[in-house]
Length: 344
Image (cartoon, rainbow, N blue to C red):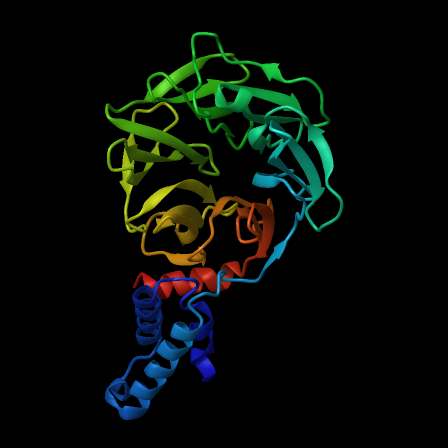
């Protein structure tokens, strides 16, 4: 199909039928301009693309994803080391009626995983300088950090701030601040690791804030704002002092959480619900229509994390029946091109 071959590849990644066909048709019509759109040959090509989409609805990924972990535990929330050579991730298992929590490290190119911590280490996030890893501790009732070489957890937040169901901590690009949510007021906080100060920057009654990520220049923060009753979320950008905020538009209507900005600041990955399952979508960082990145009808795909060089994505998926870490090589330029076409 010549110039239209790429449309065939990008269409329908695990989307429900109507969405897959609509995405393919939209990309095709935006690429194919001129009077021949009315011809029978044009109609035949469109139908051919629609057929390809329809028969491949259950292909899960925009790009091939390789399984990094294959143990018997439930693995999740990968985070890359600053040099891109290692991934730290949480694990959970239940053995003889006992819950086992901790984290492992594994080479990002594959290999044997090594135990990092043997205590609850959820949502680990590697610091930009590689020295520390911040995480949700004590099964979500605290936020702590640990040296990247290992050791005992370090408490750094004041006792006046209570955490419940995890604080989803994440580092600023220069490593001087940590974004998180508390469990008492449902507020968004920023902790200054150098001055030791902690400041509330946002709170809204009846809503739950879900920290996402920092912009690469550190001048803004992305977060999800979820309605407690409907469980639907909106996407926002806010300054670290909380004085300015702006809603982002164009994303999937069932957007939920998980915001991961590419290292060049151009692409944003987020999680959205497809029925009872979560999938990963990708959109322009400033907002706009999205393409499915890892979406499948029977599995959860969540916890996306970009590699430092912006060429790979680590995420967790239940496609093996429990939860494993996967690595996806991303054609960044091709994705930008497709999103540009989609958002014309």
